[in-house]
Image (cartoon, rainbow, N blue to C red; front, top):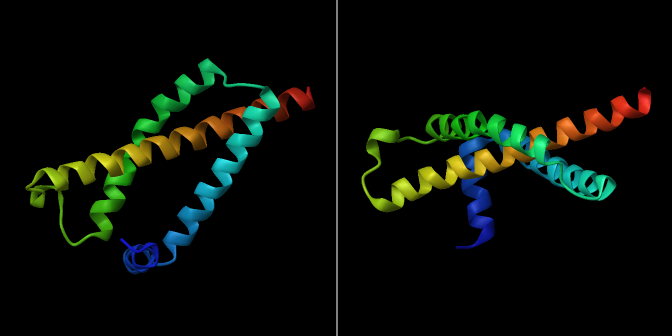
Length: 115
């Protein structure tokens, strides 16, 4: 599993959307780290909201996967296929949870600074 081969495959499947998604991942990760550092911890209430909002993000990841691949969910036959589907959902859930947590946290900080 060469990372450059994986990059080439994802580039072929997603096209320019790959770079947009990678930029969002990088931005959300860095923003999350800075936010946790500024707040000196996680906000449980905001994390719970972000997790609930992350579920549609997992579903959207599955929809994107079905759009960019040549097979659908009915073509999944073996355990590896179902593991990949679960992995895509999980990564979409985690990514959107982090993104929603970051947006909510920075919005709270900016609102507190303005008020």
